[in-house]
Image 1 (cartoon, helix red, strand yellow):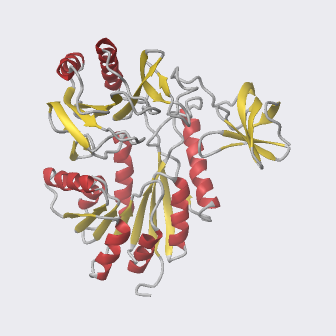
Image 2 (cartoon, helix red, strand yellow):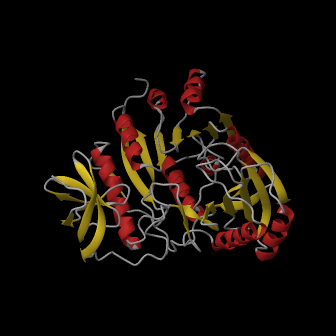
Image 3 (tube, helix red, strand yellow):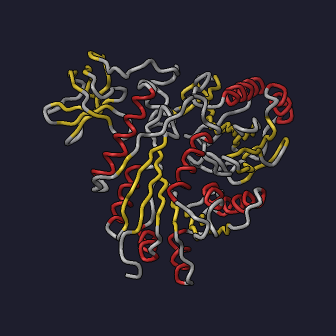
Length: 456
């Protein structure tokens, strides 16, 4: 039986979907933050449950050949990048295994082609959006990221995965907060004014938007802050105050007040131009997004005669890619603001063969099918919880020739593929794409083909 506070030597035989090392002591699974597969480590048991426990890494007896020194001083505490101690090839190998394990264990899928994860040539400074919580510690303003599994803010001078302009901008705002003695938000009391600093960067255009999230109706001396920002970061083209007075963990409120510049900034994915507002959803890694969507278009295998459904379409990025080779594309998205953005994005790119519909896909698609509107190819890009079973049932009734599934969660992906496999679809290929280097997250795009009898 495991005992709390007792030290053990343990061999790490695998890694979890959260990037923890895992080994066994007398049959008990033990999870260890910071330990890598293949290592022998000394740990201290810190928590014991009925069938498993958690250990704190004390000493590395035999390190993995893939272990490296983290590039960030906040790594041990920050909840952002859990794999900084693993070299980049090791991360890609880990994500390969993660996808294959979920497909086999949850999806019960055998003999599926799973390609190696497509990585980045330059896996640093890849994020085009940064969200820095602001807090106070012993009277000192700190801006950084949340500690693992908490909302305690870990201070850091810079972040190696964000665009470099984001660190420069938050440094300016932090100095302004301290000089003007502006209060910062305390989640426990609900008091204080400044909650978050958000930056959005157009990688292809260089344009930057700054969004300052406040627990109030205005920011004292905001004109002076605007002057400092555009002097210290001339790439800033737009500055907003975002009003969030709710007792919530949600970062952004629904109201934005522009205090400088343009309503949007502009960026591109492939040849397509996008206007990005403070509340727009836009993939945070534009380099890998183009890789992902190009693969999705390849898997759709369009000839120019197909009707395509793009479900959970967001601001229409995949819809635009599909429109190049489709006869007609229908995009469905539950967030009405995103649908408005999608319509505007189709307009500014001169694309006329897309129709966007606001509503829940599991309600919209059955209605369209009943009216005789069916798809030859369906693309789904759901949130982490995966697809609603009602929607999957309608798709299998509709019998499109191909389903292209874009997923950010291998577990719910495997579950949904298992359902589709039981209803006359065959998983042909799986292509993982590393959208989030140094983290345990992996995106996948999957091609499925119908292999039943049409009309049955």
